[in-house]
Image (cartoon, rainbow, N blue to C red):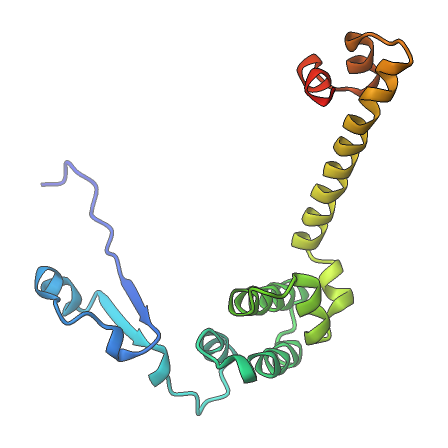
Length: 176
């Protein structure tokens, strides 16, 4: 009986924007869904009487577009007031930005940060730094590829151009 390790217990949370989206055909999973291990949450029914930052952030997912930006600003302010750990605050702000970016797909991250009034903060986030570095690297690569025809016109061989620009021979040949 003690030959195998004990089984770890599990729990699951199923989140629906509203109760009407809970599937009516639950027969195949009824035993699981009715067990104490599965909890269903309907975002439109959450009780927000308490001043819970966490619940308010989850509700931001279903906030109407007309009020979502203002709600995002409020939540960022609330996070700054309630949280003492700077790293956690930064992560919460990034989470709020991400939720709003999914809601407003036509906005860039910079435009959204400006609307939320967190432009400088956004530029210090890991995500921004990573995107910026990727953009710079792409720009460097593009500049190298644009230089290939000019270097070849000066009489350098494909191999010499590859070495000079730190490219592969195949990349130089494709740039011609």
